[in-house]
Length: 620
Image (cartoon, rainbow, N blue to C red; front, top):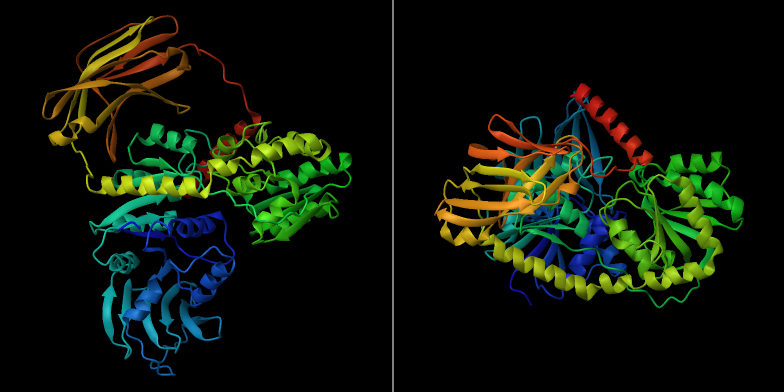
């Protein structure tokens, strides 16, 4: 067993939740064989957590070694509860407020929320023990959060929510090294605020970090901004696919702290139930990003060719009524069925001929691996990131151009009618269990955690970086050659061999990044000399490309704009020119080396994104 503790932080755990919650619990379940002290930390108020944990134990996702820590259960225990059997304080009543009472599973009042009648805003929350005694007050009006003892007297108060959450998390450490992993963007702020030096800080990305149209240069999803602005503070950041890790490293800086670990494949049960050759399934949240109407509309085409075809859509979410109306409008009531949430994932996939995924974006696509692991091939839009990383078209599944509803329908008709092709895809799909097997992923997480522990003892932050170009020359045969220096305000010699430099070319309008490695030598303890060349000129599309330096050292990264200091600069041909503006240099490409094909779906998504951004600017 490892000698450190491992805790996964997420906002809440509920019985009916999507892939993130299940993935975190599965990870804890598997890694409990390697770590003696492992648990999940939550931050919501749920008086029925004992029922929730029991549910996950009943379906064999939660074993007895996994601990659960909740901030409000912790505060309740700190208040030294003694069961009195009655309320010891009277809840404040006033004609200007109204209140809502939350009851637990056994009908006991556990939370009283007070609202201002005039504006409907929450004024105060009173959290109660099982016996009805107040143990914690959240006064939002004055920004005061108070822990109370059994007599209602103050034990400790906090000025911010972040303050008592940090107090709670740091109290769990018990003077031992602890790997603290943020599984949601809600918990990133808590992770960043932990000051205990024994904390090894890790964050996991479960979704695409970009907004529509989900291309390399798309804006960050707002909830991801804190994480990406503070990547230098993390000992590890974990993505689910190699392609997302590469995109993040390319756009936000190459660090040794970026890792990849996918979700585990299902271990097929002994259920030998034959699949229904005319049933397709989807296991998906009922949300807009999943584009479920695409599957329903495609099925209208399918049933014209395959009269017995059925589509079962399993899941939960706010758009269920919209899907039912669409099914009714298309008169597909005998073919498409909204089935609700299921816990029996493997059986649901196992009895289907194939499964569908029509998402705009997927960081991984947990249901893809789950479906393939039981031999059910997947027909999927070829979106970033998981589908194109996991599925090999026509080998272990089918990839469809995003938004191509006719192509989606044709692929379904093909698999419904071509049983040999379906069987061949099924055989290959099952091999996914080797790539995402439990043992392999356990070892991967073990390596990530060990590297993060090592990294936490050598964190570095460099200040005052300056760079200068002393030579920039373009030659058609060798490419663009550069020479120059990087000046550090101060850097310890032991980090000299950890410095990695790349020459970066960043396209201005349609963001794209290209890199070339640079060789370095140290002129003095705080100054290095670099030189190198960029030869892949055919990759430079038409437009202006800024030239930067990418400076990495373990967890730290910074893009530096080099100044031209007594620099020799020159060279051009009919397609490319080195340009100078004040003390900066950039490349101007006049003719594209190759023409990018127009994708109508992404063109429309980009257009919608521009409208969205414009509306936000007007509203902001």
